[in-house]
Length: 212
Image (cartoon, rainbow, N blue to C red; front, side, top):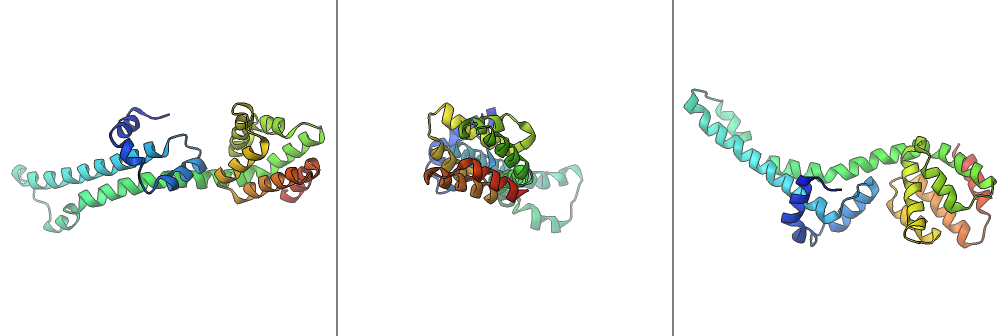
């Protein structure tokens, strides 16, 4: 969901942003951060922030030039900072905006890895009751106590139930999206177990014990 400001950015730069060489990088970063924004919309947002930063820098130069008329004289040494400020502030605003998804993805990774052992115990308990994998992820997605693990489980179940994606494809999509290597390895193991005809319940029990 875009804010009004982001929507404006997208209207102005959307077509050009869609052709950006950074589109694939931003797409992956947004998925890992669980930010539901189109990559071209986010690139447009970053570009606009860079322009706004540059405008702010120009404002500093104008302010510096006007101050003497009010009897305020600033040290000449400040010119070394103020003159390049449009470039510096523009670049800072742009790169900080691009870094936000990765920062959020790293935060999600920590939350996932902290709560994964307990989430796997929950999965193992449900598997012993004979519940299907799809419904296990549905139930896990409803348990908000598991934080970002629950979000990923809900997303997996959404792919299965709403978009009619088979569970193996849904898990593969999750592996590409999830920022935690440990969770990726767990899901990849589940995929291997399913495709090889192995016992998924035993796999869940073994992984829950291993992670604890």
